[in-house]
Image (cartoon, rainbow, N blue to C red):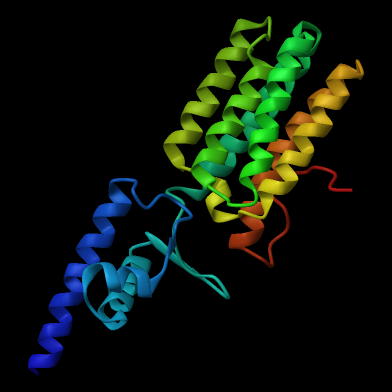
Length: 230
């Protein structure tokens, strides 16, 4: 009985500790909860930590994935999807309208940011990568001459950052493809491609990130966005 009581107390401690870090965004959405690491941090065995994580899973704060383990859940998956879908539309349009106003200096700045993102792939830092990703896209859409459209893009990014810290923490394999797609978008702008082609490239780039996230969470489900993945 004393052992069960003691383990129960430790489980409560682990639960409180992990939950506080999720609430405080120290463990953001997609963050992997490694039982051994947490147990070592708290000076206890993995048993009470496992019990705490199961409790958090029941509350919807943690999800388990095969061959991955426990991760912090997305705060609101449907809101994330709706925000990404909308942001893909407005950011794609804003990028296309910005293209004629992007001089070589701006494109070189975007390319330099993308190169920094590429260098992060070797020792991946999802938070730094996400910050650079926003900087990259900001260079491409900020010159948009339509202030109402630009306002919608800003609102979308603000809403997205409030929903989750980094999709790339949840699906790190997406990062390499993202860098490659950035290069393709820059090539389209430099070559003076049709605005619609630029818009679709930027839109589908955003939607592919969303689809990869959903595919990781729901492997049997079809992609949420009606884009051509060919």
